[in-house]
Length: 282
Image 1 (cartoon, rainbow, N blue to C red):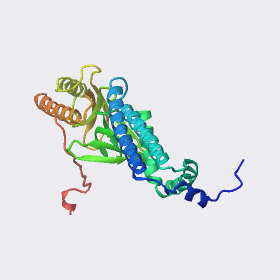
Image 2: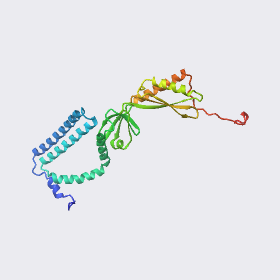
Image 3: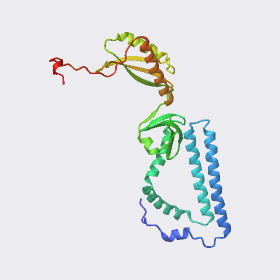
Image 4: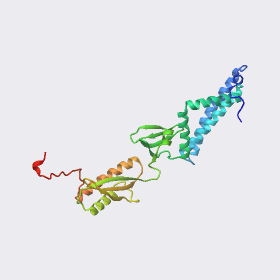
């Protein structure tokens, strides 16, 4: 049932903030309580986060620590106001109206805050995981209540809004411990395909960084304009650095094996026919 009156009672607010008769000791007590609350909040947040990291994910431990800290700050604020003789009831009513206005004014910040909490509860990635979000990829360094901090392979620090992360496709490279890469390689027409496949398999299996289980696959992909194309698929450690190094190692191994087996990787070429003979060429 809706209340009969929704306007802010200005007299009640005036009464709530009436500081008449307060001495310096009351103000000092309020200040000490609030400062002590802030210090206690930071201490509890740090302690709880450190203890819980031994039992739960680091991001979730940090979230619980932060929430406990926020509660302690709110309690300290309430006690500080009460020591000043402030009536909490009318103040909470006024703050509720102000809070609604601020929620509309700072909806982007509020959206990121909620998204940050959801990320820490759902845990699509953990601290130290290597991920890709939109055009950014790197190692997760921090999952805050508003920002996700990622260190890229180039040594750059990227802070991505939590709402952007939760709305995007998240590619977690390191979650499963292995990652598969595909390398496309073409051979010239007329090559014995069975021999070429065997050479590719042997070269890929012996390349540094390629996992033995699951082993690599070499599949015929199709007949291109200038080459018969294979795809070489192999598993390797999941980090971004391992991806690039292993892919390079496989390419070097295939090139050396093809040279030994006298198999040619053709360059793009096109044959032009002149039906009336060379005299009509322009």
